[in-house]
Image 1 (tube, rainbow over the protein chains, first blue to last red):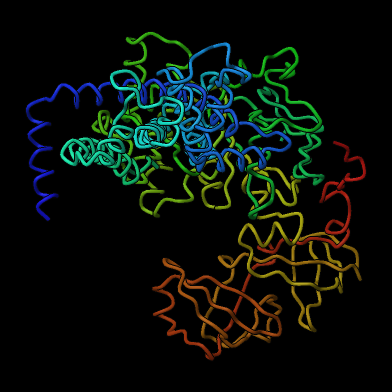
Image 2 (tube, rainbow over the protein chains, first blue to last red):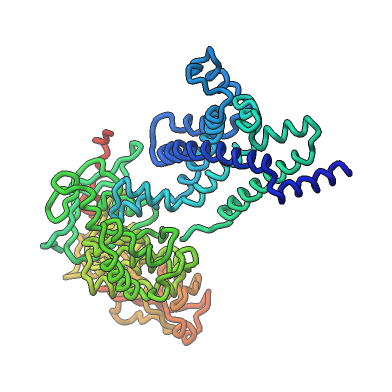
Length: 232
Length: 382
């Protein structure tokens, strides 16, 4: 029990004294996961909206693929990104394995299906007649899409948060393609794994608390979105 | 009724989806400033026709002409839609303030902020929701939301307004108030309006003409009094509130009237049909009077029948009384009359109705092509 209490006490000390290493890892994690989420947002929202608003043969298959992608195991993503970026791999010439760029690619691959799936669901949840109403107001197709995105904005925010939540907390892909290099590719999750294996529970708990704060903030937004009512 | 100043016209309009013919309207002309109601049971095709006319649903065949120009050809669809407005059963408001909702159509058209403010304020006042301007649409009651939806529709000054069951989900007092306000705005702006409704009273209150639809076709179109009192067939008769529909055969033809045999009882009706023709008699319940006096059998008075009350059903302001007098007959009496006559189920009464209050449908009209449009389903190809 002492080991836990001591760890928590030291963790709070590290947090409130703005320990350089902890802050550095946190800031780097935010940069990598934020960039990956931004990329997934761009791709995921476009694809999700397009699939939601159009009818085409094989649409159900595409939707099921997206939904399957939402549960993509990070380790599998890490494995394939590593293979692709390996020196002899198809994209080995880029020489970006064990760099932040590789981590961003892997995390974007993990987050994109999540953002796509939630965006798709968000757009489909809007009343079908809303599209007719917008067209009846004289909107062009582009104006209609813009208005629909604005109407689904909170659910789309949920998509962003879920995507970010998925990648900030994953460890498998980051450790495989980033290598957990100190001051270069070390993020909150990979550092927690390493510090735990070394028995440095104070730093591990401090990093864990930061991850929990992120998780709490993400869930706060998601709960707010869920509880909100649509206008009649 | 001839439409001289047509604003909207449908020609050979067909909507076919999934191999089914949903709507087939060979010809429909809507006059400028006219209010036309499409009535009919659920699934009659009212909403589909409304959406096809407004080009929110692309017709499978046929043309829509706006002021004589073919929509989708000489008249661009977007330009056409910007001449229209549509209000659905659900208000379908955007997740923003009431003001922004009413302004949305104007913003889509790229109008300036000053103009938008002026128009929106005017519309909010027309529909009595000026005080809700800054309220979030999420906090509105059903009635307030539908008023906002109507204000949004009128804000773009549409040349044709389409209303799809706009009051169906409102409580009766709210519905009454909104219909009254809408009626005033339509009358003031002289906006051509097409309303789809399954409520004949709404149709009666707002319309210049009523079109009765069934199975995707317009069965009858005409002035409200014509459709209400002179339905072309039993389906229309039942839908417009004619409770007594009797099948009989003409026993005798007189000058201007006929004597019809209904289960051995003779009913005199004003109408023209040859002897031995099968006819359908339609009697509105409001036109049947009840009394406690015994039937005057000695006189030549016709359409006076003694009977027994089978069932009494209160309908709010009136009471529906079902009587057996050799044939089933329905009368509406006021709650006061009901009390004065001490009407009870099983009680003997005398029912009476005028020969002029009966609408006669000859079987030829019921079965023939003149009443119902031919269902040309053989040429479906999509």
